[in-house]
Image 1 (cartoon, rainbow, N blue to C red):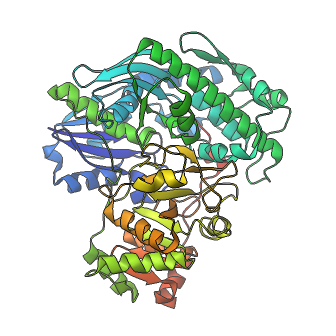
Image 2: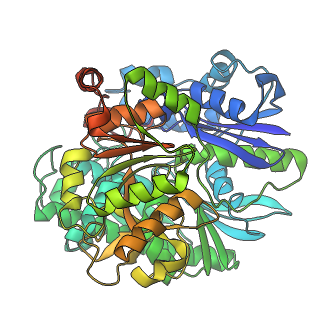
Image 3: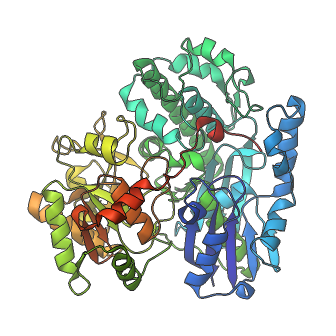
Amino acid sequence: MIVVGISALYHDSACAVFVDGKLVAAAHEERFTRRRHDPGMPVNAFRFCLERAGLGIDDIDRIAYYENPRNKLARQLSTALPSGLAGQRASLFKLDADRPMREIRQVLGYSGCVEFVDHHESHAASAFYCSGFEDAALFVADAVGEWTTTSYGSASNSDGLRLVEEVRFPHSLGLLYSAVTNYLGFDVNSDEYKVMGLAPYGKPRFRERLEGLLAQRDGGQYRLDLRYFDFHSDQRMFTDAMAELIGHPARRPEDDITSEHEDIAASVQALLETVLLENLRHLKEIVPSPRLCYAGGVALNCVANSLLRRKGPFEDIFVQPAAGDAGGAIGAAALVHHRTTGRSPNRRLGDARLGFEESSAHISDLLGQTGITAQDFRSDTPAMVEATASALADGAVVGWFQGRAEFGPRALGARSILADPRKDGMRDRINSLVKKREAFRPFAPAVVAERANEFFDLDIGSPFMLETAQVKGLGLPAITHVDGSARVQTVDKDADPLFHALLTAFGSRTGNPILLNTSFNMRGEPIVNSAADALACFVRSRLDILILGDFLVRRTDVPEWCAKRLLDAAPYKVPTASESVYTFF
């Protein structure tokens, strides 16, 4: 049974393929097109997934699409018509429930069976069928699917998946957090994690005022006060009443960040955590399982995830690494496989490296074509690891390109920028010179799994960087956030022996088997996908060394003509705030 999952035509489009119930490949379209959050039908990701699985288009038994277009259209029309479609003329073509099927037929060229899965079912399935749990409670929280914004349910390998309760649009935790993101001058559906990162700098002194935005009710329900939100405009998500409530004007993009902005971020983060805890307590009452599977865009809030694990009612929690809409491709395909065959495809996902891979021969050819005289370690991988660890210990910032690309928004040691976490100035150096991003944003550590609890207050594995933990001691300033926390990735030797070996080699030199690990990209760009992407980012940034598969490249190895052409090339387009504001079209 071959089932292909598709997430498309809103944002973060992606493709995944299951072969006889096994997840073989999954990829984001943006990684191929280099268009951040690419919403288009994932032609390139689709082609890659089939090639990786060794399949042709005629081998596909089902395509599973991650939402129900007709139910979504009903919600779009209910939102648009009362506002007279003001400001939305450029988006009217999206009001087309037949578009997904038409593009699957005409753009992908597939003529076989297509099944549509409700959006929150896709989210829930993406977590459950990757959890390895025999049964679990299900929780989904995002902006909105067709109509649902929060859902509660249960699943088992024998009986499948069942969502039993919901909160419906326009009442949404995702939209609440996004509206405040927009209020703080950041891009919606993109920069919510910046608010999470800004929150520890502030105090939640606006908490009581922000509670006016939302009223909690019994039974896992809540309601937004719609006087403060504008879900009709494509310019902003809040009304003037929100500024009056908060008592501080909205921040414009690129304005300085003040203590008031920090306090607003802290307040909305605290409010979100409180409501999520209440939601989970209600879920535990109706689904008494000790296990929880959690997905949706809100599940990418790793600070809240840590609190839910510590204070929530569930003993074990699994959050899918691509918890946002891209992960719906996995969920839709897994659910359709189970419903079609009666066999659950549930396997514990321990490795998110499901994407594109470059061969060593292709990398060698690329380097030859560009005239780069790289150091070749094809016959001696341990020496490459030792050379890299030595450079890192000496203060180098390294681009690390290895194997298959990660699926999900986090770099986990396949497409990473690495550095020494002990260096006082390393965080500021990477923020200002390499990543070219805001100084308040923290960096994450990668640590060998078997020694993680020596350095972090963490008693579980965290392979997907989806939880935070307190740092033990004061010797890791580059990865320690202002509140003493870090978003930890634990690296298991069996899951990723090469990255584990690098961490171990660095640890043998420094006593700390830990590296600063951030995504291999510059501000406004997707994470690099191909070797050519990595080489371009290496030259355009100020990285010291690039490890490109089996090859080590220093800045001085790049010929002047090659560097100039890459530097003179038009940079990737950074979306403006107006392009990124949430729109229901």
